[in-house]
Every structure is written in structure tokens, then in C-alpha cells.
Length: 52
Image: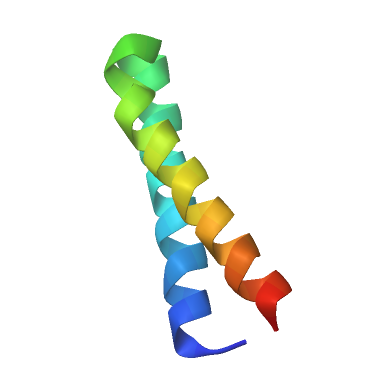
């Protein structure tokens, strides 16, 4: 696992945690951006991993 993969995966987990926290405190409408950003980062990570 290379450094860009580690960074992508770490950022995805961080934004997922932020999204879950915002869902609990503010509701899903305010957390949508964090959840979508986490999903995009997970997809990019999977694409990079499958290319190798």
C-alpha cells in the first residue's frame, strides 16, 4: 500500500466519522456532504487498488 492509498483511505474514514457525528447532532441533510465525500474517496481508493 503506497502513501496516496493510505491518505485516501484515511481521509475517507475521517469524513465518514464527521458525517456520522453530524447525522447524530444535526440530521442527514447537514451531513450529506461529508458522507458523499467519504464515498467518493472510497471509490477512488478502490479504483486505484484494482488498477494494480
